[in-house]
Every structure is written in C-alpha cells, then in structure tokens.
Length: 121
Image: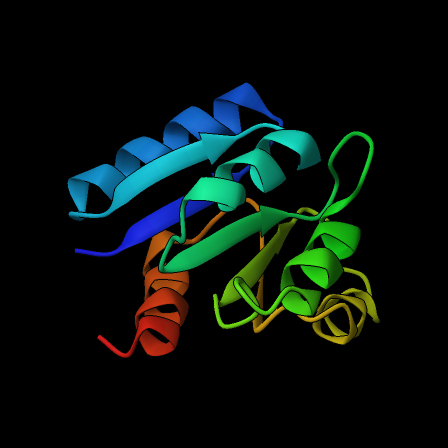
C-alpha cells in the first residue's frame, strides 16, 4: 500500500489519523513541524503528503510551496488538512500548490476518496 507522510503538530490528531490510516493498510510516517517534514523528504519520497495548514514556524502553505518548487518532490500529491473552513481557505491552499483540501475533524471516508484519487488507486 502507499506510503503517507502526515505533517501534523497536534498529538491527538496525529495519533488518531495515523492509526486509522494504518488500519486501512497505509504506511504512515509522521513529522510534527516544517523542519521534520523537510528532513524526512531529504531522504524519503512518500506517495502522498497530508499537510496540516496551521503548523508552528513555517505553515503548511509555505511547506507546500517549498515541496512543489523542488524537482525531486514536486510530483508528490499534497492534501491540505485544516480546521479552518472559511471562504477562501480552500483557494489559499490550492494556490500554495496543494492538490486537494479537506477539513478537520477528518471524515475518513471522504479523505480516503481524495487520497485514492490522487494515488490513482
């Protein structure tokens, strides 16, 4: 199954989502901030990235711009995950380079549909 990088600073969200994805057969690596994300990507190429938008330091939008600007990682689909569901948040995520957008709390069925579409499963 696919390798997923979950970039999430909230421990409860991170644990819950990673366990649920593991049960669905995904291998999940975790980064809690931008530095861990970029360090992971320096030696690993996941099949998909789930990117929390509200991270300490570099936010998910900035990280996505960095990922999409790098020839080595620009092909990796990124799904923005956010508790912010205001008008314009989806557009902001897509403009930053995210391939898809989803809200928290995560509806696993909806997220899996988006993930599978991007992974072409």
